[in-house]
Figure (cartoon, rainbow, N blue to C red):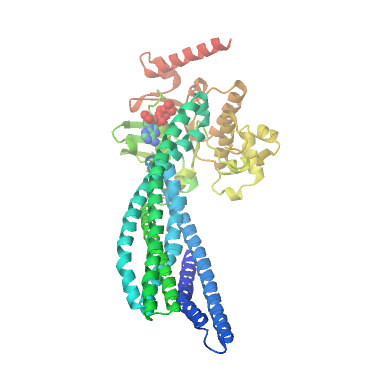
Length: 587
Ligand SMILES: Nc1ncnc2c1ncn2[C@@H]1O[C@H](COP(=O)(O)OP(=O)(O)OP(=O)(O)O)[C@@H](O)[C@H]1O
């Protein structure tokens, strides 16, 4: 269908160019014929004056009507082709963005990508259709206009050509300076907008710290700078328009003066002078059109080169390539072998170094360790959001880099500390877990919600499973979100589970419900759980302690507690101490 659209667009552009030729020919012949009309009126010599004036005017009206219709058709076709191109660009661009590896998104600002998707595509669409057709028209009309000026009166045309270029040169220099300052205004405006966007989307943090006035001051400062630049731009713009208006009038006045002299010496008729003025007027408009065509074209090139870069960017690792194992083959044995890793944005800070860990199929491995020790990084590596720098990660002995990433992620379920739900209904959020969300039945969703202890609270909402959540909908509590995320993971029915236990304390009832749901979810699967609760650690088959870029201890809970000097024991003592403190505080 993309080829169809391209063919359709090309056809539209072709017809539009045809209409453009017709309408431009009409526009450019108009002054000539209007001059004839004026001469007919002025001389008023023929006997059947009124009849010949009527027929001339009627004929011209017909021609103008055709010109108007051709122009309307051109605008319509160009608009439609432009929008079609914009749509295609947007879809291709989004498709390219969404395939990029996660490291790319660490390096690139979201706002920048959104800009590519919305503003740049519009600029390009406009550039290659409207702007191109307007530019072509301006060039053709300027050329035709100048030729007609010479045709009507060579001496007057030569006179105009002498006085116009210096004035035009001045306007070009002024215009260039104006563009550079307007770019600086745009950039500083973008900075101010970015600040506002971040603060508005994190209003809760701003409010909690009572920083409204500080933020307002920061924004005002940025807005003031925009104003400062805008003032400069205004002065330049005022000068520019003043001078161009003045020079336009001076040119017209000079043409009238010189034309008047020529008429006095009977080298020109009044009709010819009128035609000449109209042509001069059209040439002026066309030259202005050509300069805006040039600047728009440059804008288009700028946006285009930024966009092609993104369109052509190959993700560092492919989305859909490599071995696909049959589901019954998958046991779920996980292994990290001498893995070293640093995030692409901070290559100098090694998060893991020569780290090894083995998780037998069907067992639960709890990972503990100080904050920032890289526990969540293990999850990202297993999901292949990043590739290790050295060493391998295997599933059932297969290097995960050989496995098809789609297949891999389809067999791994995740529940994170702060699960993300999209702004859609609860049912859709749960169905998101299934490989094909469209074929999931309501019964399956309800059943998953029941196992995840989410059914009751969801049914408590007036709209039940159709309740919309997220920024524009109902705000769920941390425990409720987790249970929805558990239901979502259940629908996926994965062989391998990666869980990040919530650190934030849930109330006792919520905690029990989440815990119970998690236990049901973990049944019969290989689980790596980033554990914060004592009960989780005690119930796990084994515990790995992560510190200083590697696994420093690994074994059963009791066994690790036995090592008096071990980090695990220290962590546990600290935790027991903390829990004791919490209990006392509650009392
Ligand atoms: N996308 C990223 N880009 C660069 N550095 C990152 C990225 N994500 C995490 N890090 C860094 O990697 C280190 C390990 O982070 P990680 O989130 O894996 O630790 P953690 O053990 O899970 O911590 P916590 O228990 O506090 O969640 C931290 O120093 C963190 O700053």
